[in-house]
Length: 136
Image (cartoon, rainbow, N blue to C red; front, top):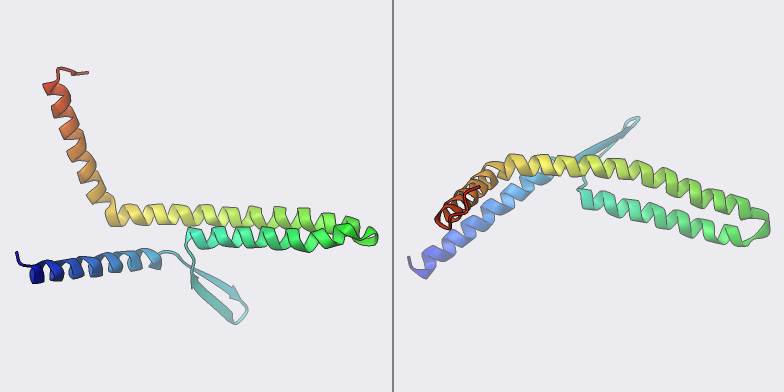
């Protein structure tokens, strides 16, 4: 096989892999409807994780100045604690669902390949253990 054929195969492989990951991202689409407004976005588990961090940080940063002023101290504490608890608990649940979606999608896309690889490795392990006299 000459270099041109190898380069062509490498490009074809890269295109196929990109198409697979694009297909995987299609299963990460979330839609929010508020009246006539419909927002659809591709949000992976990493996107949700970033949102968890952003909400937590924003609530914390908004509450700190309020806790320093005597008249709004209770409001600041309530804002920090309540916002962090509510936002993070909700987003954590969404993140968990998204992670499960990605795992299920990965299994659909690559499960057979992974199972075949694991089967080959188990067969090789069994053969080697047998050759070494370690049959259990």
